[in-house]
Amino acid sequence: MIDLHTHTLFSDGVLVPAEHIRRAFMTGYRAIAITDHADFTNFDYIISSLLKVKIIEEEWDIDIFAGIEITHVPPAQINRLAKSAKEFGADIVVVHGETITEPVAPGTNRASIESEYVDILAHPGFITEEEAERARETGTYLEITARGGHNRTNGHVARLATEAKAKLVCNTDAHNPNDMITKETAYKILTGSGLTKAQAEQAFLNSEEIVKKMKNRY
Image 1: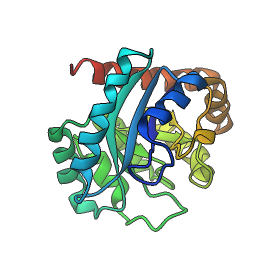
Image 2: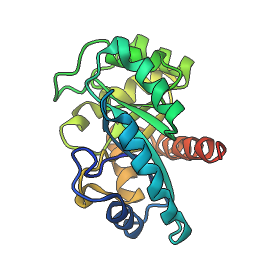
Image 3: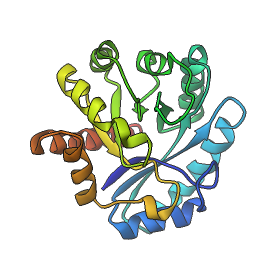
Image 4: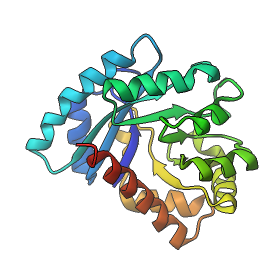
C-alpha cells in the first residue's frame, strides 16, 4: 500500500510520527507521506519536524515522505504557501479540497489545480468537468479517499476524472491507526467508486509515479 495523505499529532492525528509509521509498516505499507494540516503559521515547523523522522528508513523497509496538507487557506494564497513549503523542503504538498462535509472556500479546487507546487487535490467534492480537465492538463492528481464523510463524492470524482483522463490516486486521510488500510481494501474503495479493475490498477500506478518523482529528488 502507498498512502500519500495521512496525519499525526502535529495536526489532528493521534500518534507521534514513529508510531504512525510503525503501524503503517505493520499494515503492509511500503510508502507513506505524512501531510499534517498547515497554513502560513505552522508549515515550516511541520516540515522541519517530519523531515527528521525519515531516519527511520534506515531500520524499516518503508519509504517516508514529509509534507503538508494546506487546509482552509484562502484560494488566492494557496500557490504562495505551496511554493514556500516546497522551498522549505516538503516532499509533497496536498491541498484540502472542497469536500461537502466542511466549509471549504469556493475556488480552492481551481487554485490548487493551477498551482505548479501542489501534487494532490484531496477529496475535491463536487469537482467540475472544467476542473477535472484542467487537472489533466496540469498533472495534478485527484484523490479517491477512504475517509468517511469525504468519501461521499468518490463516485462523482471518479466519473469526472475518468471522463477527463485526469490522474487518480487512493489515499486514506488517516488520523489514527484504525484508518489505515491494506491495498486490497484500497482496491475495493476504487472499484466501489465506479472504476474498472484496470482503472483501479492505474490509480496504484499513479501513486507509484509520485513516489518515484519524490525519490528522484534526492
